[in-house]
Length: 200
Ligand SMILES: [Zn+2]
View 1 (tube, rainbow, N blue to C red):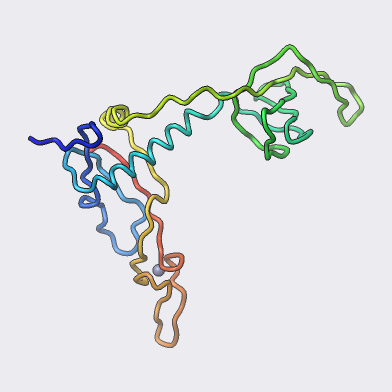
View 2 (view 1 turned 120 degrees about the horizontal axis):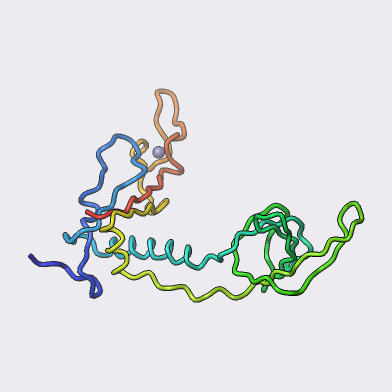
């Protein structure tokens, strides 16, 4: 059997020929099966790139989840890391965060402390948590993509594709006996389609 090769990788996609596109109206999720029967390599590459982006974004996220208890400035925040103790967080660059926002970051606990007065006037001393540059992100490769697909993993690509609305035919309007009304099934005649990516 001939196995199509995509960028050195023996995998290809069944592509949209196998779309679960049988329902009436607007199908919002399409199952995309990666397999050895290549039809649309450009689409497969787009799917892979979207999955890669998701995975590498996940890897690039910092290890600590912090919650802002009080914003001091754009680079300094009193934060909580989930326990009973608060920290004085010092960011590497200004952050657009407000009280009660949660965020992920790479940070180390230092020996430094900061003291401040709380609402009742009591002096509070907390350790300083310093943001450090994130570690380089390990690349998500096609080999890994195929291996994890074969292990049964799936990915959902939200709003991966835009299609013409089937209800109004892309006009965004529907003709009623007396008038044209806005189509309630789409936005300006377009619908967004999620892709569920899985192994054949
Ligand atoms: Zn419509």
